[in-house]
Length: 277
Image (tube, rainbow, N blue to C red; front, side):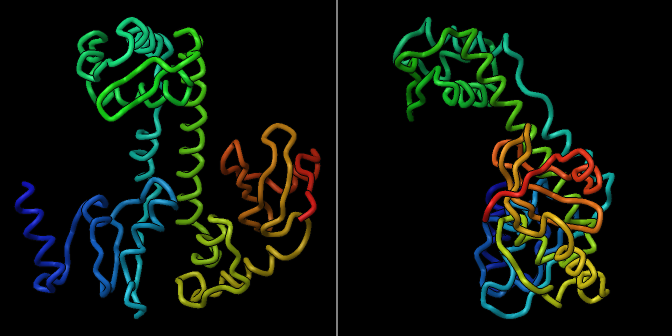
């Protein structure tokens, strides 16, 4: 839709002239209306973070509201595509070399002409190179960073950062799949994902009404590595148990993101050490 049409729909919805709006998530995130009674997702968001923010449009007046996710495992393929490969080191090095060659006061337009990259792709690469300590980004100019590493070295650092971020995004998508397929209380699952504890199932969601959530709660409280336990993995470092089922754990590691582990393998291979709380 054209901008004017979107603005008209937005205004009519906010004024109460329109009862239902079918929209992209970006449009929906622009809604700040206290009496939204439901948010339905026709497709699966890329992470529980995005889903939590998007369903937060509903019930801001404190009255009951509903959130429904229409889920098919096949829909995750599109989200996996969006968490695709990291940029190649050659292209990153080319951008770092262009910034160094142009010197202080470079512009995105000038760098785009020099490298032949689109504005969108160039912006993503510059963001990575800034995190790698190679460039400094201003509102209108781009400068080489003081003490910047060699362009080839900067490209390697930036590539590693991109791979790490991609891996974390993929684990977030996997957690969205777990949310959609869980038999646990969905509110408890979401709060656990963000490191908050809900002692009892909420009693409102579909799994609570089906009776599976209470069974999951009992299983999470028995045996080693209880919910919210601090743990350490010899390769992935420190983390926290955010989901605990009968046969598996989901751990949020500080560096490696979300990992799902089979409990019997964890115990047999001594993969986790429980840390003092």
